[in-house]
Amino acid sequence: MKRAQDLIKNTKLLASVKKNDVLYLHKITDQVDFMVLVLLRKWIGGRGFIVDFDDAIFLPTWNRAVKAWIMVRNADAVVVGSHYLQEYALRHNPRSYVISAPIDTVDLYKPAAKRIVDDRVRIGWTGTPGHYENMKLLLEPLRRLVTNGYRVVFVQLGGGDKINELLSSVQGLQIEYIPQVAWDQPIEVIAIMQQFDIGVMPLQRTEVNRGKDAWKAKEYMGCGVATILSNWGENPYVVTNDVNGILVDSEDDWYESFKKLVEDRAFRKKIGDASRDHMEAEYSYKAFVPKFLSATKLGA
Image 1: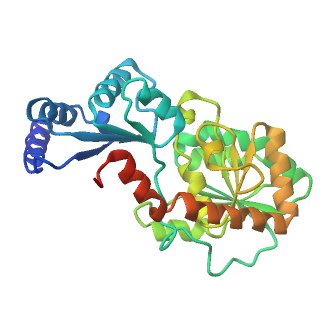
Image 2: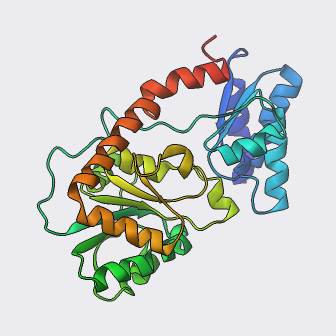
């Protein structure tokens, strides 16, 4: 019954779209019936659409691959969030462009007006329970920090109890766990991020992670936070190592990067300031709009 109701609702929705309007569709392959309606609208009425995705929507199953192939092949343009996704899209549609999602550097993502006074260095992460395997990369480096007497606190913003239990396995690590995250209230979430001294984005070397947009890193960097990232996926396209962030390949790299940023406040500030400047220049709305209009020809 619900599927029939949704089908009727979506049919009416598409019928209300003007003939010359272009549909802009984000991750549409999760909605098969709507996907079919969009394709019929194009095949019968010649009405275009643009597909946008920032995750590997073609993985890991064959049916996801088929749905993604159909939509990418038939789109008038494809906008993706990473170079890996563009490699995939270009195999099926020559009008495929990397246009990383922008952040609001004016009203939301900006350095804190006032910092928390704390003699500990605040290492912060935000995310969902799906990052459990990624967070394992931090355990040994954090253990070494604590063992060697560095005064740090790990701020876990979201992620669930299982990740908190994982981090708690590091004996002696001080943790500030904020389990209830109002993701629909970005100002509250960003206010916590702004108090990070170091932001982290660990990624295991999987194909799914390879396709991810570096969104988490962009959030930290927009707040002027020195960020350490796994050297994987889109991260090396966003960050210039030791200039506006630090890229790491191993547990030793994680530890040495933590150590350097914890010990050297001036270097930490230098990286944070450069990352903020980079976000304003390349990933702000002001930078995004002309790139988007040029690629999609929507401004023509």
